[in-house]
Image 1 (cartoon, chains in turn cyan, green):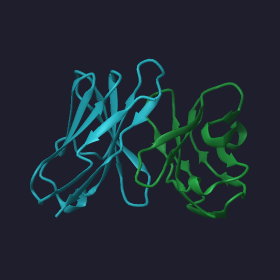
Image 2: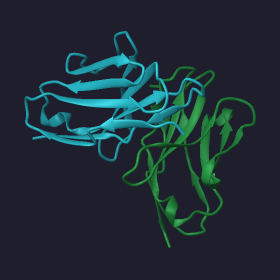
Image 3: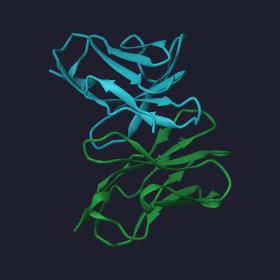
Image 4: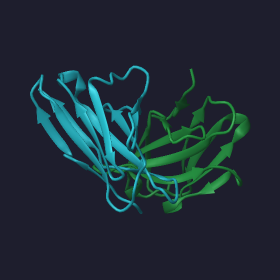
Length: 115
Length: 112
């Protein structure tokens, strides 16, 4: 199946700093990517829909100025957590829709720990 | 509020036991239904999906799910589980868009 890769898989940062997480579709082009957040022992919560070449669409309650999403190419979307705080510590997962099948493929996730 | 419910939060079974994980949703109209699995330390993988047609859907690794529209349910089943089925299972629903709404997940532990 198609592969979606996230980098870094694990990051620790100090409070107040910004962290960028990349999501790449390795063997297909993805016009749409999705960013999810997963708290421990909880489900995935959709944060935003990222469309190539346009502004991301954020879900209600998600601060777009804090979670900056850029989808500059058909294979790359980035999530930047700005001025990170300990409560932003979480597991961030991206998914991308395959152009041919329409199936969603998920990245392996990025664990963010803010000290 | 519209939601996806998985009532079994943690299921413990012995190998060869039968499995059924519940999933109910509260959306009206046409929906697409999915079951995803997350093995320890790995990313989410699609087990099976229902868009239309036969409400009994067969997926990978011997899993199947039945869509019962009148009950707003899409329960996951496997006749005989294996130790390797130990994982977190997520039900998800979309309404003709790519946006998936996930249930809270069910942790399955299978003991040899």
